[in-house]
Amino acid sequence: MCIHISAEIISRALFNYPFVGTIEMVSFHYMVSVSFLPLGYVQMAKANITVDVLSSFLPKKALFFVDLFANTVTFVAIGGVLLASFDMAMQQTSHFEAARAAPYNIWIWPSRWFLVIGFGSFLFVLLGQMVKSFLHDEAAERLGLDEYELPETPLEET
Image (cartoon, rainbow, N blue to C red):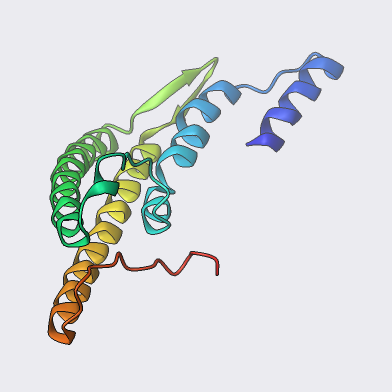
């Protein structure tokens, strides 16, 4: 994206020859991919914004149920967004959605699938984290541990 934009600026400034479709490519492809494709990774790294002012005062066992509730609500909400994104991607793919850039049409329907991939990976990771949380809590009960501890992610530095 940076190379494309820089080349367009240099071409426009030095040669008075702007690239056709740079704004469309940045708006419909680059920005969408940068925003939505990393959603699964962000969830895996537990790097989403959380508000834990009240939950920091809860006992560890209650925290398990708060996390379960929050993850379930998130799963349902993102699942709805995923279904809507999939429906829109199918519609726009069948119509070969395009943006007009001077004399050219730039296909933008492929970027609709970036949302489906991003939200799908988010749900996949979230489901894995929920299963891991259940298994960890069940193992803690079998071992007779008193406190529930959140499982560590493989991306945390030691």
